[in-house]
Image (cartoon, rainbow, N blue to C red; front, side, top):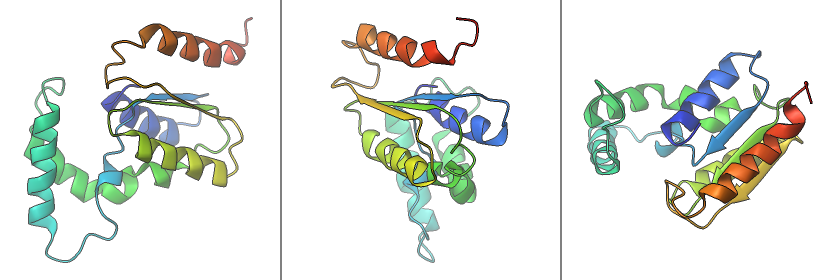
Length: 156
């Protein structure tokens, strides 16, 4: 999953043990954006800041979703949405984490470290110097994903 799709890949993979592997490309750790614990009385300011950030990032791909609505939902579910909270559930599966220069790399690197600390020795990481859309690195990205997937295919 890419971006919000990466968020969904982590959540879905952690919830379903039948998912054999997880591939993340500039994954958005929504829960990880919220300080833990959120200081008492800080919720209104956090919602406003998160809403503004989400609006700047563009919400067009999320039909029926508003920046404020997603900010409120993120605050309400931050603890269970944090990638770090999914490390134990994903510790036995291959995970690919690809990052770029879009600002999401530190959270993705922290997730890779949490997976390794949980005992996952099948975490592959790659950083490509490019934008969030991987505009000038799409061939490199495609090659990396295909190389990672190849040994996972039982029919080869």
